[in-house]
Image (cartoon, rainbow, N blue to C red):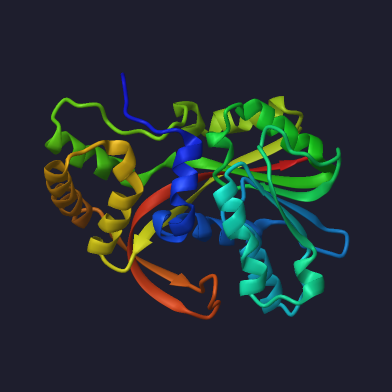
Amino acid sequence: MSTTSISVSDHFNAVAAKYEASTGGCTRELAKYLVDILPPFDEATQVLDNACGPGVLAQEIVIKQHAANKEAPSIACVDFAPAMVELARTFPHAYALPAEQRDRITFDVMSGEDIRFPDDQFTHSITNQGILFFKDGPKGASEIFRTLKPGGTAIVTSWAKLGYINLIHHAQSIVRPGGQPFRLPVSDDWFQGAHLEKTLKDAGFGEVQVHEKTVHYAAKSVTELCDQLTVLFAAGLGLSDSENVVFRKELQEAAEKVVVKVERFGSSRDPDRREELIGVPMVALVAVAKK
């Protein structure tokens, strides 16, 4: 079936400046979980934050280490979208890290299919919601394997369920009955845990375990959540001004029926903050692979 889509690079460069709101915090919620299940860090730790976006995972590592009165390990943050990398560069200064800690966190524009680091470089490698957007997923998996040290751990995530997509499709069906439903430029294969596992094993990983983790696309209210979704997907929908009005109305009515209460602790700037939000469940696939 024909579908409406936009290019991957255009999508991520466009949302870079408003990334946190555009993701509804779901990738940060997932990143917090991933940091918790990683093997402990030590003086020899070398972390790859692959497809880093604005550096959310690296930020969560820094936050966790700070809470434990420990210094952040060496972290290499790479992403193929220049706007994302420029945004990520700002966080070590924003977090007021000492100069020697800032120097251990690097930022480079780099494709996941061509990670320009030596073989066996990293002890920890995390690709959080990135591999599904690679032009060549198997090549990206091979690069993750190549650059990981023997004995190292790689965590690679994808989605099993994007809770907001059903809302988008419902609103579209009212505005344009029989029209082409929006979809992200992602193969349906990436929504299957078996595909993620096979891709990593084919790349060379001998031990791969895949499990699901529910997170949430969330906001302070249904209205704010729907505003975020409208901004995020407006460019790909191609609706007229009058169609946008109807779309926004239908989106809110559909969202009100499915949102759940969400409680989050901490944020990028205030780790002790507690928030009560509403959100749409999102189910992530989490692959933990050993080399």
